Structure formats: structure tokens, C-alpha cells
Image (cartoon, rainbow, N blue to C red; front, top):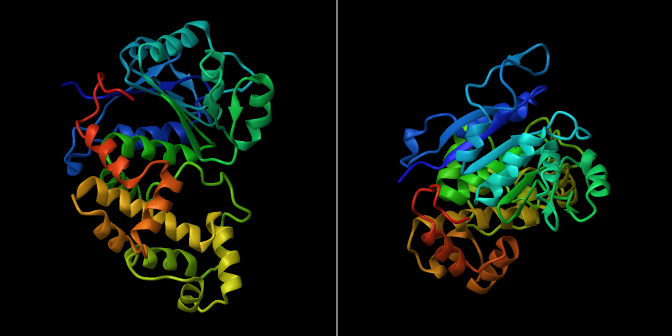
Length: 327
């Protein structure tokens, strides 16, 4: 069995942050994870040095022929939303999809997928400032801007810059499970995987409490998900009124404290369902849900499937991802 091959596209005027995020997730060896990690390559849009930002030059060892061998292709943005990609690149991308490859874009990279004719009838996302342009230019594509990333079959698109990390952790989670994805997130010193349907931006992304009360509270809740939490009890813990906590939490995360706690409990439940053969009643207890019925209802609302279906789906894909894996 060969390793699942991830190929990242490099191009003139390369978006370095997005490109660096792809390298950080997929190119580093990760022997501590105990899984057969990806094989990673970078292919260039053209031969020779590529001009990035601030006078930085990038030279990729691989040519576009690597796309023909890729199982997953990452497009870290595209230089100008109005510029059509070279025909040879669009053709390579289209043929890769036709043979079963998984295609992923960050930010303006969605325009390359659209130009390749792959987004007809699809639901996608992009950076909020590109949304109207994408929707007008490709009216048969549904553009969803209230999302960090959108998965529609084998096409996964993400919003601007850092949302690409969420999308790529989603890929890792899909391929190797929640435990591995959480370990990768921990190594990157970023929060655990976020669901794709969270808002792209919040009113005040910089946390308003200088003492760091909100992030400290979030970390404490993650360590105590099996306990009962209410708005009043959480507010008392950080010495705030419930109304102030509600406002500051929404400013910091885009979610209410209640919804955030539910999603954290579901994230833990996913890991337990993947790594343990515990009964659903025990998973319900460990995750802090009051009843198994409540657990099932919230799990289906957040993930779209029941806990039993999720466990069965994960069992079916436990083998390391390879070129023959069905997505």
C-alpha cells in the first residue's frame, strides 16, 4: 500500500501564509503519531523561480506532472481572482478530479477550481471579500460565506488564510481520526479542529479581556466537559455577569457559551467513538450530556449523522489513506 500523496500548487505571486500552512500540516515528518503519514510534494505552475511577496523567491522541485499522481491537491490561493489559470493547469486539475482525486482550495484558490469547470452545482466558500464576485461570475455555484470551509464531495473549499488550517485539520481528521488531528493541532499550538460551519469572522477577533479570562475559561471547560455547566456557573468562575460573559464569548468565538460547550462535547465524543469501544451511555457520561437522547440529538445536529453511524463510518476508513481510498 502506497502513502496517500498530497501535492500543493506553487505559482507566481504565491500567497506565502497559505503556502506555509500547507507545508506545516503535510510536509513535516510526524513519527510520534504512529500512523503512515502523507507523502508530500510541491509542483510549480511554471519552471524556474517563482515570485512571491516582499521580494521572496520560491523554487519548486516538481512540475505540474505531479498533479497526475496526486490523491489530494491543495491550491493555496490564486494570485488574482480575475485571472484565468493557464489552460494546461486547468486541464490537469480537471483530469485529476475526473480520476478521483480530492481537490482543496484556500481563499481565492476557489477561482482556479471554478475556471476548471468543477464547481457547477457545487456549494463552496471563499474569503468573504471574494464572495460576491464568485457568485456573480459562476451563478450555478452556491457560495456559502458563513463558513470556515465547505466539503461538497471531493471538493473542499475554505475561507481566507487561517481558515485553511481548519480545512486541513478536517482532512487529517477525515483520514486519521480525531485523536491524530488533535495531536497535530497541539503541535501547532492552535485550538483543536473547528467545525466548518462556524462564522468566518467575529465582531472583535481580539479577545476583550486583557487578563485572558475567556481563553482560560475555555481551557478549563475542555478539561471538565463531564461536569455540568450553565451560563451562571461559568460567569461566576470568571467573575463576570452572565450578560457580560455572553457578549465577550460571542465577540471572541462567534458562538454563545452554550453552543461552544456543545461543540466541544461533540468533538470529545468523536474522539471517544473513534478510539474506544465504549457504549453510548458511557460516551454520553464522559462528554457531559445529561441524557443519551440529548447526546444523540446534538451529535446529529452538529455532524449530520448519528453516533452509531459515525463510529461505523470511521471503522470503514481506519486503514491509512491511499490512492485507492474512496472519498
